Length: 150
Image 1: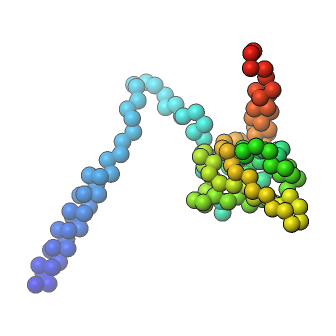
Image 2: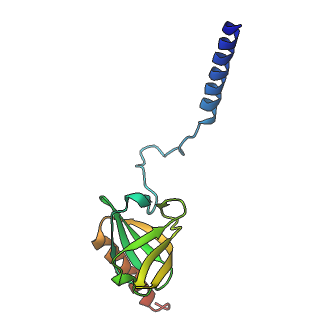
Image 3: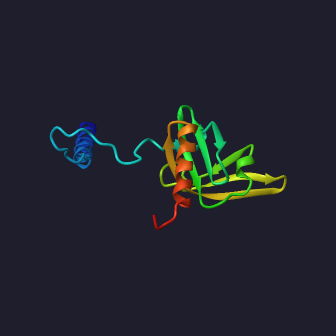
């Protein structure tokens, strides 16, 4: 009887392994021959675990740059967050525990001794460094100031 039970378990394990192998058939889209792989626009890695974030820099009251080791991300907030540029510490509240391009979460900071502000995140963009982030913010501001007719 023990022999029959063991062979049944082996058969079940084999069936489960074959089923898993047949379900994992995820393939990439075929590429044209000779065409180099082209990354998506903004496909640089913007994924940052919150527990790994080790610093931030405020650019203005709408933009901050967070860093995790050698990875940096420009975080754009919805609208004006008064006093963010002067914040000494921030917290990022993201329900899934990470930041990515979707920008789901909030930046929490202290405006005053008894005043804590929460600003929702609009989007997160991977950048090389603070200099690139400042250039993107300047470009965004220039596009906003440009008249619509030109």
